[in-house]
Length: 198
Image (cartoon, rainbow, N blue to C red; front, side, top):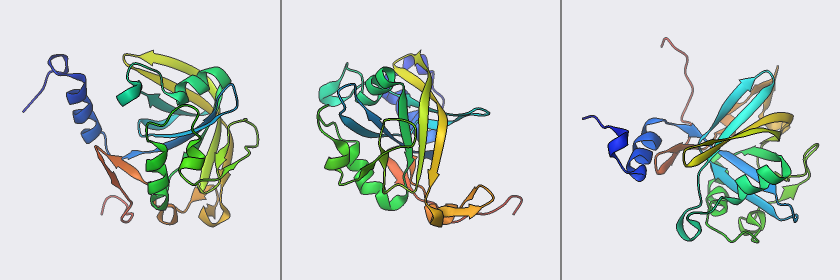
């Protein structure tokens, strides 16, 4: 079986991509609007873009459902305020993360809707998710329009980690972190680590 993406609908190509590029980490992105409204939303098109200087990137698609044809609040806020926070999602925060992904009106505070605690960042004005064990403050580097989506690249300007997740020597206890992953329409958790060759 093989496919020519030019002959498929956008949704069909998305299904192939999201089911093949797996598992994907989830960036739980917190932003603040020009008027001071807090926003929180998860994105699984997410990775490291550069190690020096440290940069992270997320891809933000267009609004869906009732908000089809609009831009997501995350993109609007980052373009306006030029900063954001990426919070790392462990498995135990899966339900609040899912709640924050709902298509809520712009004025609704996702922190409040998901029962989460916003806390001040060190450098940026966007709030961090207190319950998330790792939070990375970012300043906008650039936004690149790519087809239907926007690739947002941010420079990490401050890094936070809860002591119990830090092993020392700049290493993270991944088994304790148990990060949530995305697999097409489902989610995954880490079930153990191994080295290669086995």
